[in-house]
Image (cartoon, rainbow, N blue to C red; front, side, top):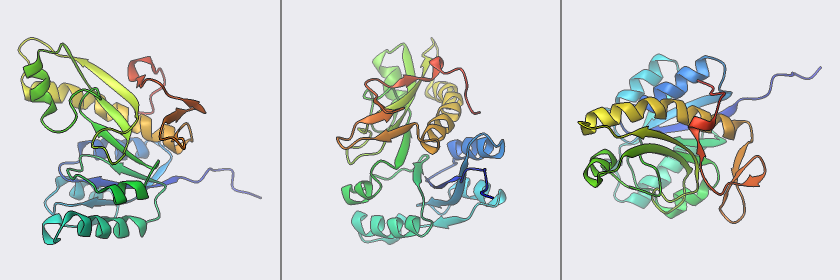
Length: 226
């Protein structure tokens, strides 16, 4: 008799630092509500704190120190080989602080996600909290998007919004947003794992078989996995 339990989606997570979104994803997996198998956590920085958390929970970890490679393309080829050894159905960027080459990104077309701390297309790139405060914006947020060769330019699937309050510092605003990121990313991964989101032949994001014209606001979702 066939096993009625659906297979878990194999995932590789890439990090560069503390891995707070990685923590949230692992916690959600451990509840049984996120049907994925994290086959490896890979970091380009040997001292990344997220590696220790992954190891403590029994997830294999690998280090590819980008400073030991002659150029970006050489590093990306080594990283691709390391990822592909685990045969993932999805690659998750969780604070992975590297600009990736087009060849690398295209290899994982439609099966690589990133979370960015802004309401894309606003404030792509680095230092988003500082730039939001300097702009005088009254709202900030985070976006989960499919990765394309354009940095932070791939189709956005989900967003979470937070207010910018009087007296906010970068640290206060970042902490407020991080709470939402930890709910947003597992939801996007769940949607991918259950076949709800994808990318069509033209590079547009699809949700439940229909083209996604605007990102989904997490505030409109009643049933979050974690």
